[in-house]
Picture 1 (cartoon, rainbow, N blue to C red):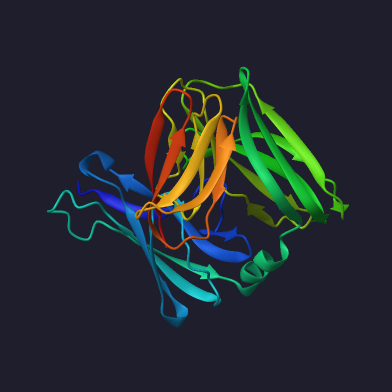
Picture 2 (cartoon, rainbow, N blue to C red; picture 1 turned 135 degrees about the vertical axis):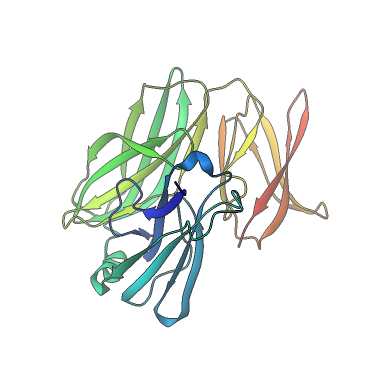
Length: 280
Protein backbone atom coordinates (compact mmCIF):
# COMPACT_ATOMS: atom_id res chain seq x y z
CA UNK A 1 0.00 0.00 0.00
CA UNK A 2 1.15 3.54 -0.76
CA UNK A 3 1.41 5.97 2.17
CA UNK A 4 -1.13 8.81 2.09
CA UNK A 5 -1.20 12.21 3.85
CA UNK A 6 -4.38 14.28 4.18
CA UNK A 7 -5.09 17.56 6.02
CA UNK A 8 -7.23 17.20 9.17
CA UNK A 9 -8.65 19.63 11.71
CA UNK A 10 -6.54 20.45 14.76
CA UNK A 11 -8.17 19.23 17.97
CA UNK A 12 -10.77 21.74 19.19
CA UNK A 13 -10.91 23.58 15.85
CA UNK A 14 -13.51 23.31 13.09
CA UNK A 15 -13.22 24.19 9.39
CA UNK A 16 -9.40 24.53 9.62
CA UNK A 17 -9.54 28.18 10.75
CA UNK A 18 -8.96 29.97 14.05
CA UNK A 19 -8.79 33.57 15.22
CA UNK A 20 -5.34 34.96 15.93
CA UNK A 21 -6.06 38.26 17.63
CA UNK A 22 -8.51 39.99 15.29
CA UNK A 23 -7.34 37.99 12.23
CA UNK A 24 -8.71 34.71 10.90
CA UNK A 25 -5.90 32.30 9.96
CA UNK A 26 -5.62 28.71 8.84
CA UNK A 27 -4.57 25.89 11.16
CA UNK A 28 -4.29 22.24 10.23
CA UNK A 29 -2.83 18.91 11.18
CA UNK A 30 -1.85 16.08 8.82
CA UNK A 31 -3.13 12.54 9.15
CA UNK A 32 -0.79 9.93 7.66
CA UNK A 33 -1.95 6.51 6.55
CA UNK A 34 0.98 4.11 6.90
CA UNK A 35 2.87 6.98 8.51
CA UNK A 36 5.78 4.69 9.36
CA UNK A 37 6.68 4.95 5.69
CA UNK A 38 7.37 8.69 6.03
CA UNK A 39 10.53 10.30 7.36
CA UNK A 40 10.38 13.93 8.47
CA UNK A 41 7.55 16.41 9.09
CA UNK A 42 4.58 17.17 6.86
CA UNK A 43 3.41 20.63 5.78
CA UNK A 44 0.20 22.00 4.30
CA UNK A 45 0.11 24.17 1.18
CA UNK A 46 -2.90 26.53 1.14
CA UNK A 47 -4.19 28.45 -1.88
CA UNK A 48 -7.34 30.50 -2.37
CA UNK A 49 -9.05 33.68 -3.58
CA UNK A 50 -7.08 36.82 -4.29
CA UNK A 51 -3.85 34.90 -4.83
CA UNK A 52 -3.79 33.62 -1.27
CA UNK A 53 -0.84 31.27 -0.78
CA UNK A 54 0.75 29.99 2.42
CA UNK A 55 2.58 26.93 3.70
CA UNK A 56 2.24 25.95 7.36
CA UNK A 57 3.71 23.13 9.42
CA UNK A 58 1.49 20.28 10.52
CA UNK A 59 -0.20 21.14 13.82
CA UNK A 60 0.55 24.86 13.62
CA UNK A 61 -1.30 28.01 12.56
CA UNK A 62 -0.62 30.36 9.69
CA UNK A 63 0.44 33.99 9.90
CA UNK A 64 -1.31 35.40 6.81
CA UNK A 65 -4.78 36.80 7.61
CA UNK A 66 -7.73 35.46 5.61
CA UNK A 67 -9.45 38.54 4.22
CA UNK A 68 -11.68 37.07 1.51
CA UNK A 69 -14.50 34.58 1.86
CA UNK A 70 -14.55 31.70 -0.60
CA UNK A 71 -13.16 28.27 -1.35
CA UNK A 72 -9.61 27.42 -0.32
CA UNK A 73 -7.58 24.32 -1.11
CA UNK A 74 -5.41 22.68 1.55
CA UNK A 75 -2.93 20.12 0.25
CA UNK A 76 -0.80 17.93 2.48
CA UNK A 77 2.86 18.00 1.49
CA UNK A 78 4.62 14.81 2.57
CA UNK A 79 8.19 14.72 3.90
CA UNK A 80 11.09 14.23 1.50
CA UNK A 81 11.19 10.52 2.13
CA UNK A 82 10.25 8.10 0.66
CA UNK A 83 11.42 9.61 -2.61
CA UNK A 84 9.39 7.09 -4.62
CA UNK A 85 6.12 8.35 -3.16
CA UNK A 86 4.07 9.82 -6.02
CA UNK A 87 0.86 11.77 -5.42
CA UNK A 88 0.77 10.77 -1.75
CA UNK A 89 -0.45 14.16 -0.54
CA UNK A 90 -4.22 14.65 -0.66
CA UNK A 91 -6.25 17.89 -0.76
CA UNK A 92 -9.38 19.16 0.95
CA UNK A 93 -11.58 22.08 -0.04
CA UNK A 94 -12.52 24.50 2.74
CA UNK A 95 -15.22 27.14 2.35
CA UNK A 96 -14.48 30.17 4.50
CA UNK A 97 -17.55 32.27 5.30
CA UNK A 98 -17.56 36.03 5.71
CA UNK A 99 -19.13 35.56 9.15
CA UNK A 100 -16.04 33.62 10.25
CA UNK A 101 -13.81 36.51 9.17
CA UNK A 102 -16.09 39.08 10.82
CA UNK A 103 -16.30 37.09 14.07
CA UNK A 104 -12.58 37.53 14.66
CA UNK A 105 -12.87 41.29 14.69
CA UNK A 106 -15.65 41.13 17.27
CA UNK A 107 -14.72 38.20 19.52
CA UNK A 108 -12.25 40.08 21.62
CA UNK A 109 -14.79 39.83 24.43
CA UNK A 110 -11.93 39.81 26.91
CA UNK A 111 -9.11 42.29 26.50
CA UNK A 112 -6.28 40.19 27.91
CA UNK A 113 -3.63 42.34 29.59
CA UNK A 114 -1.47 39.61 31.12
CA UNK A 115 -1.07 35.83 30.94
CA UNK A 116 1.59 33.81 32.77
CA UNK A 117 2.45 30.38 34.14
CA UNK A 118 4.81 30.15 37.11
CA UNK A 119 6.16 27.24 39.13
CA UNK A 120 5.00 27.53 42.77
CA UNK A 121 6.29 24.73 44.98
CA UNK A 122 4.85 21.54 43.43
CA UNK A 123 2.30 23.14 41.14
CA UNK A 124 2.05 25.52 38.20
CA UNK A 125 0.02 28.65 38.84
CA UNK A 126 -1.63 29.95 35.67
CA UNK A 127 -2.70 33.57 36.04
CA UNK A 128 -4.25 36.11 33.71
CA UNK A 129 -5.78 39.57 33.83
CA UNK A 130 -8.37 41.30 31.67
CA UNK A 131 -8.56 45.05 31.20
CA UNK A 132 -12.18 44.80 30.05
CA UNK A 133 -14.81 42.19 29.16
CA UNK A 134 -17.81 42.38 26.86
CA UNK A 135 -20.26 39.47 26.73
CA UNK A 136 -17.53 37.06 27.84
CA UNK A 137 -18.63 33.56 28.92
CA UNK A 138 -15.70 31.48 30.21
CA UNK A 139 -11.99 30.72 29.93
CA UNK A 140 -10.46 27.34 29.15
CA UNK A 141 -6.92 26.70 30.37
CA UNK A 142 -5.08 24.42 27.94
CA UNK A 143 -1.86 22.49 28.61
CA UNK A 144 0.63 20.74 26.35
CA UNK A 145 3.85 18.78 26.72
CA UNK A 146 5.10 19.58 23.20
CA UNK A 147 3.67 23.03 22.45
CA UNK A 148 1.43 21.59 19.69
CA UNK A 149 -1.14 19.20 21.17
CA UNK A 150 -3.15 20.90 23.93
CA UNK A 151 -5.70 19.50 26.39
CA UNK A 152 -8.26 21.30 28.51
CA UNK A 153 -7.30 21.21 32.21
CA UNK A 154 -9.89 23.59 33.62
CA UNK A 155 -12.69 26.07 32.95
CA UNK A 156 -13.06 29.39 34.78
CA UNK A 157 -16.26 31.42 34.50
CA UNK A 158 -15.77 34.91 33.06
CA UNK A 159 -17.30 38.10 34.43
CA UNK A 160 -19.52 38.71 31.40
CA UNK A 161 -19.21 42.49 31.26
CA UNK A 162 -16.64 44.64 32.98
CA UNK A 163 -14.66 47.85 32.49
CA UNK A 164 -12.33 47.10 35.40
CA UNK A 165 -9.11 45.13 35.67
CA UNK A 166 -9.98 41.59 36.73
CA UNK A 167 -7.63 38.80 37.83
CA UNK A 168 -8.08 35.05 37.33
CA UNK A 169 -6.09 32.01 38.43
CA UNK A 170 -5.96 28.24 37.99
CA UNK A 171 -3.51 25.93 39.77
CA UNK A 172 -2.25 22.89 37.84
CA UNK A 173 -1.31 20.12 40.29
CA UNK A 174 -0.74 17.45 37.64
CA UNK A 175 2.87 18.35 36.87
CA UNK A 176 5.88 16.24 35.94
CA UNK A 177 9.48 16.98 35.12
CA UNK A 178 9.94 18.80 31.86
CA UNK A 179 8.52 21.82 30.06
CA UNK A 180 4.78 22.43 30.21
CA UNK A 181 3.13 24.80 27.74
CA UNK A 182 -0.07 26.70 28.50
CA UNK A 183 -2.50 28.84 26.53
CA UNK A 184 -5.89 30.36 27.21
CA UNK A 185 -9.05 29.91 25.17
CA UNK A 186 -11.37 32.86 25.70
CA UNK A 187 -15.00 32.14 24.80
CA UNK A 188 -17.82 34.67 24.67
CA UNK A 189 -21.57 34.21 24.98
CA UNK A 190 -22.22 33.72 21.25
CA UNK A 191 -19.73 30.83 21.09
CA UNK A 192 -16.95 32.76 19.36
CA UNK A 193 -13.51 32.27 20.86
CA UNK A 194 -9.93 33.45 20.71
CA UNK A 195 -6.59 32.07 21.93
CA UNK A 196 -3.87 33.75 23.92
CA UNK A 197 -0.19 33.37 23.14
CA UNK A 198 1.58 30.28 24.51
CA UNK A 199 3.60 30.48 27.74
CA UNK A 200 5.75 27.78 29.33
CA UNK A 201 7.27 26.71 32.61
CA UNK A 202 9.98 24.17 33.39
CA UNK A 203 9.96 21.62 36.24
CA UNK A 204 13.40 20.24 35.49
CA UNK A 205 16.60 21.15 37.25
CA UNK A 206 18.13 22.02 33.92
CA UNK A 207 19.84 24.74 31.99
CA UNK A 208 18.28 28.07 31.18
CA UNK A 209 16.20 27.90 28.00
CA UNK A 210 14.35 30.19 25.60
CA UNK A 211 10.92 28.95 24.47
CA UNK A 212 9.84 29.06 21.76
CA UNK A 213 13.03 29.55 19.80
CA UNK A 214 12.74 30.61 16.98
CA UNK A 215 9.82 32.92 17.81
CA UNK A 216 7.87 35.84 16.37
CA UNK A 217 9.42 38.11 19.01
CA UNK A 218 7.33 36.85 21.93
CA UNK A 219 9.20 34.30 24.06
CA UNK A 220 10.12 33.23 27.59
CA UNK A 221 13.39 32.77 29.38
CA UNK A 222 12.85 29.84 31.75
CA UNK A 223 14.93 27.94 34.30
CA UNK A 224 16.35 31.03 36.03
CA UNK A 225 17.57 30.76 39.63
CA UNK A 226 18.40 33.46 42.10
CA UNK A 227 19.02 37.01 40.99
CA UNK A 228 20.15 37.53 37.41
CA UNK A 229 21.23 40.45 35.26
CA UNK A 230 19.67 39.90 31.83
CA UNK A 231 20.73 41.74 28.69
CA UNK A 232 19.36 41.50 25.15
CA UNK A 233 22.02 42.30 22.55
CA UNK A 234 22.17 42.44 18.78
CA UNK A 235 24.88 40.52 16.94
CA UNK A 236 27.15 43.59 17.07
CA UNK A 237 27.00 43.51 20.87
CA UNK A 238 24.77 46.57 21.29
CA UNK A 239 22.58 46.30 24.40
CA UNK A 240 18.92 46.67 23.36
CA UNK A 241 17.30 45.86 26.70
CA UNK A 242 18.47 45.06 30.21
CA UNK A 243 16.82 44.14 33.48
CA UNK A 244 17.44 42.54 36.85
CA UNK A 245 15.24 39.57 37.72
CA UNK A 246 14.64 37.28 40.69
CA UNK A 247 11.92 35.34 38.86
CA UNK A 248 12.25 31.80 37.53
CA UNK A 249 10.69 32.91 34.22
CA UNK A 250 10.91 36.18 32.31
CA UNK A 251 8.71 37.20 29.37
CA UNK A 252 9.97 39.15 26.37
CA UNK A 253 7.90 40.97 23.74
CA UNK A 254 10.25 42.34 21.11
CA UNK A 255 9.51 44.90 18.42
CA UNK A 256 12.83 44.17 16.76
CA UNK A 257 13.26 43.19 13.14
CA UNK A 258 13.75 39.53 12.32
CA UNK A 259 17.21 38.08 12.76
CA UNK A 260 19.47 36.70 15.48
CA UNK A 261 19.88 38.24 18.94
CA UNK A 262 21.78 37.27 22.08
CA UNK A 263 20.59 37.00 25.66
CA UNK A 264 23.35 37.39 28.24
CA UNK A 265 22.41 36.14 31.72
CA UNK A 266 24.80 36.97 34.56
CA UNK A 267 24.53 35.95 38.21
CA UNK A 268 26.93 35.57 41.12
CA UNK A 269 28.36 32.28 39.84
CA UNK A 270 28.25 32.34 36.02
CA UNK A 271 27.44 34.07 32.75
CA UNK A 272 25.37 32.37 30.05
CA UNK A 273 24.74 33.48 26.47
CA UNK A 274 21.78 32.14 24.49
CA UNK A 275 21.08 32.77 20.81
CA UNK A 276 17.54 33.94 20.06
CA UNK A 277 16.07 33.78 16.57
CA UNK A 278 13.22 36.12 15.64
CA UNK A 279 11.32 35.31 12.47
CA UNK A 280 9.29 37.57 10.22
